[in-house]
Length: 436
Image 1: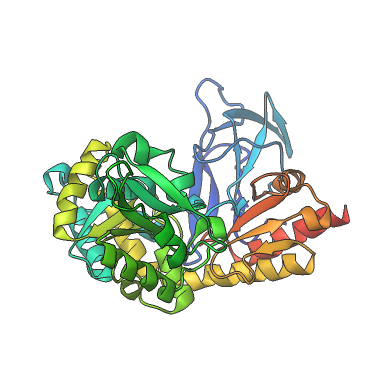
Image 2: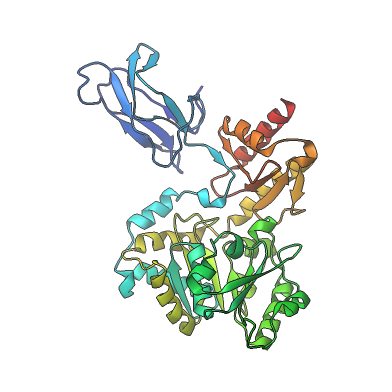
């Protein structure tokens, strides 16, 4: 029996176009893919199904699972109830459970409608009204004077670094931070500055240690140009940076007249988890970047906010980095929808992460952080003698994708495209592997 979430309808006589249907948010039927008789095959019942661009090819699987799709440009001949493939048959599940990252979220039908109807203009000329509205909204929500829409969080961070610093300076970073580990040394390559990484136990900088890392005023030593913080902290399992610890760094930076930038890719997760308004969390920072394309569910884009003076430099920086965009209101509309509709629901992601975290703890996995704080955590398989890569391959066969970092550790991330049922299926799959 087919799942309630979707059904596969094939008109064997092919007298009319056929489609794969799914249910919309109101319970109505919506065609996912329209199928028709291919040209050149006369009256014989046949159908060509094109490969979906968003999905990797997989081996043959059952169609008895939620939404389905048969792909790889396969041609099928129908003989009664028997389906024979002329060549390579692939069945791909649109309902694949993906716990690798919250970057894999797809825009909802409601978000897509807003994108389709967006009013646009040339943003390089500052004439895209939807982009302008998004920038004003972002700045207003965080208590800053101005905002800038950028294609990615990494670009937002790097534009901020470029704007705040001068070539030859140092930038203070936490040693596991995204800006240091996952942005390809761009601060050195583009801005001519060098990172000075500071180790920490939980992603928060100790001010006493920070003081030791600031070079004295000697002409032969590079001067510090910027301090960067990250909240939530990705490599620390989505930990929230406590506001009192942030304030210690900001107070110190003000004494030294140093700007402070926040990589707030998941700022709103920090806000929901701490119960603190985003504007309060970012109080005292000179600039803040946050992502629209992670837990907020937009397909593309991040925001950079700061003062009007800072934004004048950042606008030049964005152009130099190749981030000048034209009729981009189509994407900005998704960001506006995300800010208006997808912040409050982040707590659902946190609860799903907590549920998965608790189940894995009962199974003997080593978990970081303890307890889970937001939508991200790391699970060590060393304590239960399991190879994380092998576990990932086993789950992939069940349509569950996880992110092993190596043979001993997995990162789990919940998001708006992961349901409670998906968490239950993931837990069941892991138990099947351990019982194996």
